[in-house]
Length: 489
Image 1: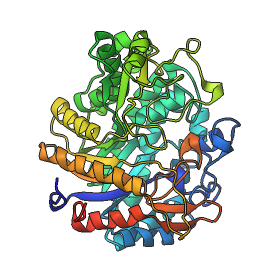
Image 2: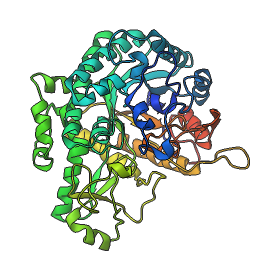
Image 3: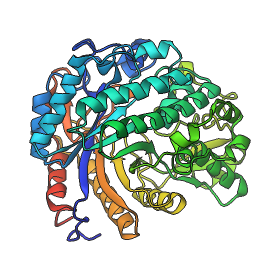
C-alpha cells in the first residue's frame, strides 16, 4: 500500500482497552472482588507488587477519557465489561450501579460518533466463582451465559459489536497451566478443563447475546504464526505442536466444530479435555461467528529442544528459560520443567528462539509485521470466509516525558505504520479484513508486569492519573481521518 491508497470504505478503525487494566476503583459502585484482585495482592505475583486497584483511573475520569476518544476521532472503541462490577459474586441479579457505569460509557461514545465494541470477559472472573473452581468447572460457563444476558439486556440498544471472550488461551494456560496469571495454578489438566469450559461459555454467551441483541457477535483469539527454526523434521514437528496448542486448539473447535486430533499425541493432558466434552458442546462452541477477532503482536520461531546446539550454531538466541507466548517470564515460584532445560509450557520438547536480526519490543517480542499477513491469510485459507477484525495490535515501549513535556514515541509510530501496511497487504490478497483496533488507547496495568510496560497512545501519570496524548495519538488521528496512512509516510 502506498501512502496515497485508502482502506475500503467503511473499514472500522478503533482502539482497545480492558476493564481491570484501566478502571481502578475496585471497591466502588458495588463492584465485587475478582481473581485478579486476589492474585495481584499475593506476594511475588506481579512486578513490584503492583495491583490494578487504581490502574489508569478510568472509572473516575470517564468524562475526560470520552473527550480524548472524541478528539482522536475513533470510529470504534473496544472496552471490556468487568464481570464483578455487574455481578459481584458471579451470579444473581445485576448490580445496577455497575451497569450504570457502562451505560454512561456507551452513551458517551455514541454521542461522539464512536461505536461501542463490548468484550464480556477479559480475565477478571468474580472471586466467588474462582473459589468454586473457576473455569475448571462447567458451572462457570453457565454463569457466564447468565451474565452475558444481563449485560446484553442493559446495553443492547447501544453496543455495535460483541466480543464474548478475549484470548481464551491466556485465560486457560497462563491462569491454570503456567501460573503466571490469575488464579495462579500450575496444572496442565486444569488448563485443559479451563480451555473447554471457556469455549463452552463462549458458545452459551453467543446464544444469549443473539436472543437479546442484533449486533454482530465474535470472539478474540491471540494468534501467533509458529515458524520452525530450520527445515529439520524435529523443528517442523515442534512448530506444529506449538501451533496446535496455541492456535488450532481454539480455531478448530470455533470454526470447524472439533478439536485438532493430533493434539492427543502431543499433549498428555488432551484426554482431560476430550473427557470433559458433553453432548451438544461442540455444536454450541462451533456456532456461526459473525466475525473473528485477531490479536496479533509477534511471530514465534520454534526449535526442538533436541536441536538447541544447532539453533545456537545457526545464530539464534535461545533463552535460558523460554517465556510463554504473549506473557512475561514466570515468577520464581511458578518456574518449572526438567532442570534448567528450556521448554514451552505443556510442550517441554519445544522452545521459542529469537532471531538475532529482528528488532524487539520492550516486552522482548519480535517485531514482524509480515507475520500478521501470514496469519490473516492462513485463517482465510484454512478456515473459510469468516469476517476478520484485528482487535489488538500494538507495541510496548519505554516511553518517557521529555524536557518539552511531550512523549515522542517514534518507535511505536513506526511499528503501527508497518502493521497498518501489513493489514492493507492482507486485504489486497483477498482477506476479508474489516477493521483494525490498536492496543491500547492509554497506558495501563500490564498484568504480571504491573506498570512497567506502556502500550498506550495516551500517556498516564499513574500517581495522579493525568493524561497526555503522545505523538502516536496525533499520528493515529491522521490515519483515521485519511482512512489510510497519512501522506508523506
